[in-house]
Amino acid sequence: MRWLESLKRVLGQDTDAELGRADLVALAARGILSMGRRDARGKLVFPPGVVLRVTAADSSLETLRAWARDAATEQEVSARLLNEGVEAVDQPVRRWEVDRGEADSVEVIEDASPVYALLVVVGGDRDGDRFPVGAGAREWRIGRGRWHADNRLQNDIVLSESAAWLSRAAAVLRRTGAGFELEARDQGEYVVVIRKDGGRRRPAMSASGRVPLTLGDEIEFHDGKESRLALRVEAP
Image 1 (tube, rainbow, N blue to C red):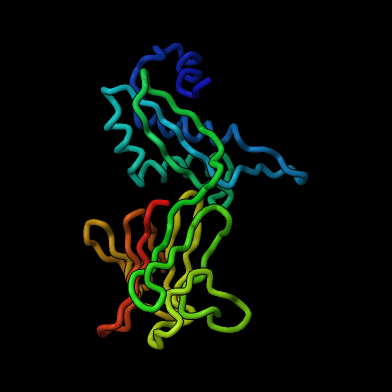
Image 2 (cartoon, rainbow, N blue to C red; image 1 turned 120 degrees about the vertical axis):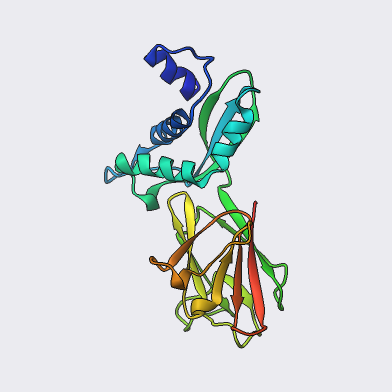
């Protein structure tokens, strides 16, 4: 049974009523919580990724699509899960799908291939290389060549083999619940996140030292002069 119908029957509401933003957040969190299972130590664990499949009537389709794209909706779902004792690092990667249907409803299912994005190298000798980012790891080291600063840690995302101006330990991408944040390392202030709207943020200059990433962003690495490489954040 779909979560919206179930909840509205409990509340005595009309199951054909439109889904509000608070309903969307509540039902998404409730569906995710229902997928948790206790491990041998009693800890609640979840699938690596889930799909939040939203069905919307014509009258609310575009509104629900806008809410599903809004980063604030994700933050509210994360906050609800945190209130239920699910730490950010334990939350599954989430992917939203909004399709036309007879009535508004929400279904949460396990994602068979929870890939959040593809990071595509733009420029240099590794131009066009693609790196999947999903639920299989907590962080991805980014830099020049195989090794991340020394011969103990390897780079997960190799931007270049030959760009001497680019640090071996340029940056680190970290998973935070359903989202991802970029931290500049040895490349420092010469790492810039460029938003789809043209806005620019430097992780090294932010209060937390990290900047959230969303689909469509571009991560620029440069040397303060003319040398430049980038990672484009694309949908899988």
